[in-house]
Figure 1 (tube, rainbow, N blue to C red):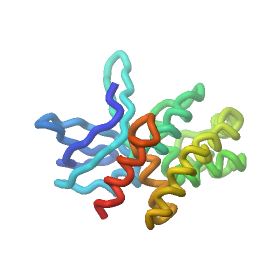
Figure 2: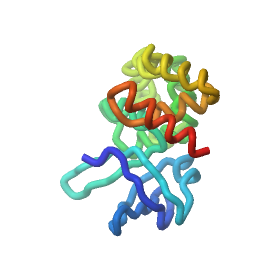
Figure 3: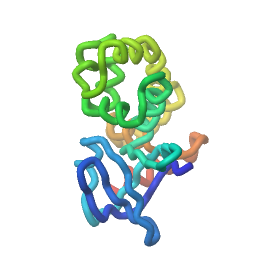
Figure 4: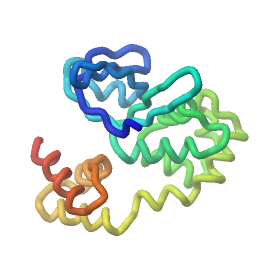
Length: 183
């Protein structure tokens, strides 16, 4: 299973980007904001989900771990496939989408191509309350506080930590500090 992909974006077309890694080009399906965020001939690091069917293997890409987690939670709902889950990202960032789900905003969800009232209700029913677990864990809040104490902004720290890899606090902080010091 391919979880992250780091390489150079060599082309963009429709909803896809080609990311070249060590001479191999991977076609990655991206939502609109992600496609706009990556630039041709520029390095990119994407979180990915490999979707395998009888007749194809597809890679879906995300800008950070939070988007990836939300995508996986959407896929866990019966009747929501990867294309529909990607369409839901047209509503905004992960915080906006999670907020809509937590509020039970059926009208916003049904505005997405392919999401009918029944599917929107199922999404709200199955995910309402489950999304807050990812947003507010104490360990992440402690790491954010540590980065803020070092002079980095709260929102930028939260964003970088969401995309930092590793299970241990030390690994995530090390990755976050490297990323924050680049800019």
